Image (cartoon, rainbow, N blue to C red; front, side, top):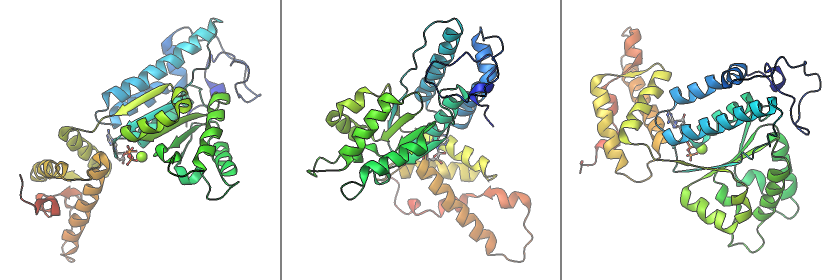
Amino acid sequence: MPRPLYAIPGAPVPPAGAAVPSAAPAPALPPTTVGEVLAGSQVQTAIDELEHDLVGLAPVKQRVRDIAALLVVDRLRLAHGLPAQQPSLHMCFTGNPGTGKTTVAMRMAQILHRLGYVRQGHLVAVTRDDLVGQYIGHTAPKTREVLRKAMGGVLFIDEAYYLYRPENERDYGQEAIEILLQVMENQREDLVVILAGSADRMQTFFRSNPGLSSRIAHHIEFPDYSAAELQAIARRMLDGLHYRFTPGAEAAFAEYLRRRLAQPHFANARSVRNALDRMRLRHASRLFAAPDRPLRRDELQTIEEADVRASRVFDAPAD
Ligand SMILES: Nc1ncnc2c1ncn2[C@@H]1O[C@H](COP(=O)(O)OP(=O)(O)OP(=O)(O)O)[C@@H](O)[C@H]1O
Ligand SMILES: [Mg+2]
């Protein structure tokens, strides 16, 4: 359980307007080192977990560390009586499907909470349909209800570019955008908004909504994964599920990735997850076919080369 803001040892008195439970115990001595702030907040654990659990994404991880550093230094500034203006932390995550945007947004919510930036650290993930109504008068209440749920945490708007539909003369998406803009400006100490979508569509969206773009402090790009990274992601996913590849299956999966990457609609880590799900199905069917044979623990865990090679991806001739 992350500790609430008021329990962080040496937490300085928060700036006026920050929402803090009134029963906060009197703070101990204010922190004087980065280490003290980190030790009190468990944020280092969250950063280490991000580093360890997610393959690649070096620029993304660096930005997360930079944001954490800013918030830690702000705490130390406050302890010295220096003004520490609540920074704007609204973000935009651009990248192709399956590059880890949703996953990182959840980690970000946790880190922001541990640093005392948001009260609860929960993430509310929505798309256009959760915010925009079909009829006149429906959009504002829908958007406000979502904002109410997200307060104290992170509002993650996936495929945010759908909010703007210029082809419709009176599109209710614009109404949702206007409400969002107000809240992003006026309640930024209590809500972080993260917009996500593919880079080209988000660029077009921001060109039509410069007000929104200018309120986003961090534009973070999620690159496509290399074949080696995808292979490492597969290993990590299997490990998490207590499965493993035989060496033959590992090599076959490398070939699978080479072929699959050349095909359309490849969705990075998401496609890897889906491929592993299908391989587990084939593994299960293989074991199912021999109902009377006692199954060893390692057999129940081991994906073999045949489970990989039965994929349709191997039907097409390799180029
Ligand atoms: N770098 C990574 N290391 C390990 N697993 C990853 C990594 N990136 C993504 N994943 C896993 O891949 C899956 C898809 O990731 P996620 O949903 O975060 O991608 P996304 O960018 O939000 O995709 P979409 O645009 O399709 O919503 C998740 O199960 C996630 O845990
Ligand atoms: Mg996602």
